[in-house]
Image (cartoon, rainbow, N blue to C red; front, top):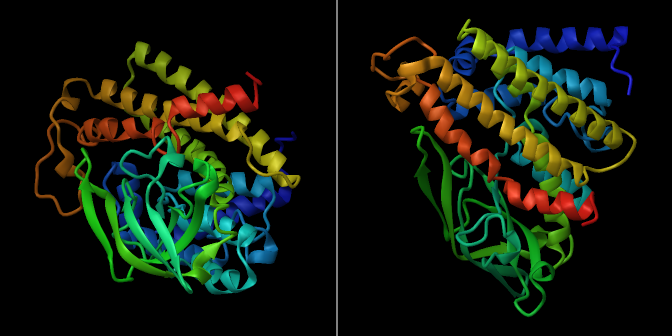
Length: 387
């Protein structure tokens, strides 16, 4: 794996940086570095700018409207945007359902759905987790019964990120109750405006409304919205989860987190801890580059994505812990209101103190979503170690 940048890659990095500085609003960038919450416009305006440039679906091959970048360009793109303070690209359209559609969908579905995903004119959310079916996803109970040219869907999804912003939701539903758990699941695309879809907010410990419950009550979904074959949705689900777990590693944002930690304390013992987490991030980055190199040769994310997910989520939690430690006693006052743009509160302590506790609590979820650490270790033991 050659890590030396070629002249054209250096020019590409400069192009990405110039684009970010021209198109990323100062207000959005300030939220990134202050730890405040983004609103919908922060994401949509930025993603639509990327879409117009042809860069939003940057992981897609050229034949489906992506830029067809090599592994180095992808690496540079993610890292430069993180350095410039860009918000994370919401993955549900470009990194999750988009690749599922162009891999398993029919030509009509590709023509219908891919343009809106590439341009970020249509927002998506993910209907996977349910009460009682999170890490054990094959235990899902949302039921879809076929009646003519439609499915009638009933059930509940939970922890659904940004469902309150979503135009569409991609759902795993049970279409055969007699088959083995994984064999009776289908992958459906559902318009969020369909009668019977109800979204109820879940407010997190950091005060943000990012996740939701989604209730499906006799929701009528055209059979044309079935991706792949009926009862074979688990294949789509595994493909999507591998891509999701690769993204959860979040190496560029962790590198940014390490850089910010260095500005918070000059204590020698803290410097040692920061150096340690910096080395962990660098090791994770090398592992991610190996996975991306395999994909560049035509492969798909495999069980190594589980390793990246485990280590990436643990590193994100450790960075949040160190930020709390660097704040000392000023991390004790819990100030989630300070993370909103329109707050009138006066912060207690230095500017970096208010986000510390809310972020620490919120980051506890990283070792659970996208498949818990315990599940990922099981995957690694079976698929890689052969145990």
